[in-house]
Length: 139
Image (cartoon, rainbow, N blue to C red):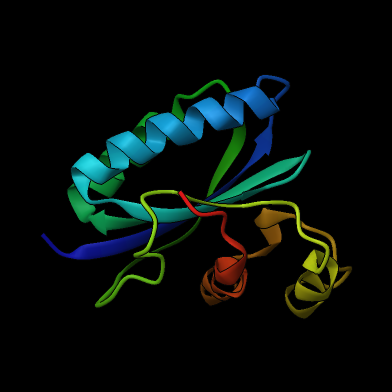
């Protein structure tokens, strides 16, 4: 099976608390490592944006599971493509924390410098997450 990268965005529900994020990361890192899925997660109080990389069947199955998760609403596929190499290979699920320089990064990718994943599609979604790669908290 070919490698793919899937990027999605969603709106956060009240169920997406700090404790819930920590629990989700522990579970995701364990499960993703078993399937050799790698990725990165960025979120704020309103939205989530995540990239998943791995075998197409495994990534597709995980996205289907995410689509039924009550912590997400208005889930939107931002990019999906075959890849030759992984961009987020260092993490089974890397977390980008709130960072001071997010505004300067966002102004490159958005008109208003405000994070809204629904406006970041295709190459722009990938480039945005790649620009956050060095900010990832170690697993």
